[in-house]
Length: 572
Figure 1 (cartoon, rainbow, N blue to C red):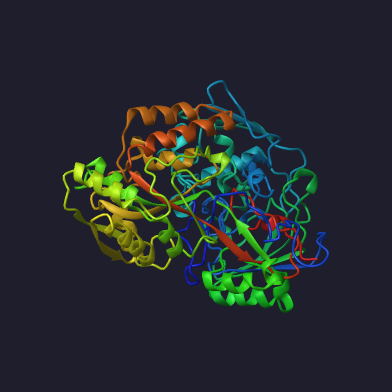
Figure 2: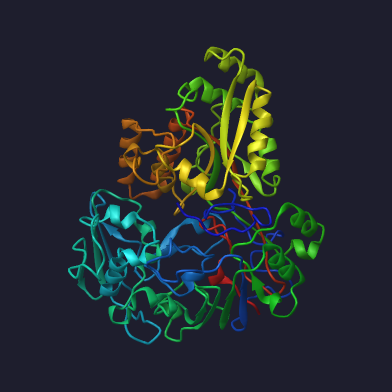
């Protein structure tokens, strides 16, 4: 589960590391001019780009980063075997080659993937990047002292489950072979047709073994991208990047690298960030944010000013906010009770509680409404915009609750947009019309997460959210509905405790497909099949609304990240 930072909370925003996003075609500024705002939109090289953020870009080590989070700042320094297509909207949800010559060559059953590196790849010191460096970079991500990255490699690579990293195990991972300096081969435990997506994650960044300084590597990681780290103060609070003179655009068609310098300043209040971007005075005219959204009040103000409105970017990211049920807890063990709640939901009031239709789109499917996920429109329990109380009462009666029932809804007290008290109250009000009395159990955020992700303490009825590590149905459906991923003694995300053999088998069958378009269609069909069990109630997909400075050019926002792509931005 990916959680790109999103500060709207202090401003009225989204969640837990995943994202504030939405789910239609992404675009640039509100006037849909994706090239930039104000004056000549032609991008030019030079100048300094300032990034104003709430959250610091901590743990700036490719082994410790979860994908390329942090608003894409890491992707300026760390190149990987593959990367996302740096284009607007749906086109940006495709995976393309980066260090490699293609997106990977699978064997017949997609259990072996082979990559060849491009010629002429160099680090910031001019030395050649080799396949052995990528192998070593992956291996060090297994070290306990460098934890924090995505967990897939430990599960997917043959013999990697108990590997402890190169500091303890000098033998390395036999599942990764490097027959020559430009070839790297991966051996997997099972078919994984989406391995090219995984190869975009920062663990696939090359790291020269001789330059590895362990936990201090984040202070000056060796760049393979267009920028190098000049300084890193207070663990990413102030990060300064300048050009890597050994990077060549001839080997990198994705990153434009227009600015000469990038100055990332974090730890700022959300409202201050938006005020500075709005005013665009001095250096702030060439500034952007990668984690701070406009709240409802700010958006209303901006919308009334045509010049400001032209500097608002709208982003889309694969993300769903939903109600989760634990069917082992009464009365949620009765499918008709779950269906009744599905019918009773007033999505209009939920969307309003989430900031309004400009910041949230109602959802009736678990998968986000984007083609790459395999989105298949369905509404199994049609409630209309404001809920179907009559149908809900009918189902409750059939379930044995003719006189209604009382349930408890668990949520976080954090003002983080998706599990907030406002969302919970909107649900409480809607269900009351159907004869369901909802008691609210608000918990501090850490307590809330500990409770809902522990099989032993998981409540029967609670607010949840999920976002994808890459734009596909796989990382969206499998962690939530694959019965083999139920974790009884750790963090569990299969909240419905679903262990349906037919669902598990279909997940395996789709994972064998290397035709990602064909896989997407089957993910969509599986989403609908799972939805029939009413284990969740999809509520809404969030939306990014973010300002850029008046001198910013070439705004590109893909459906992969939902945020402005720094690698495309120009300031002149």
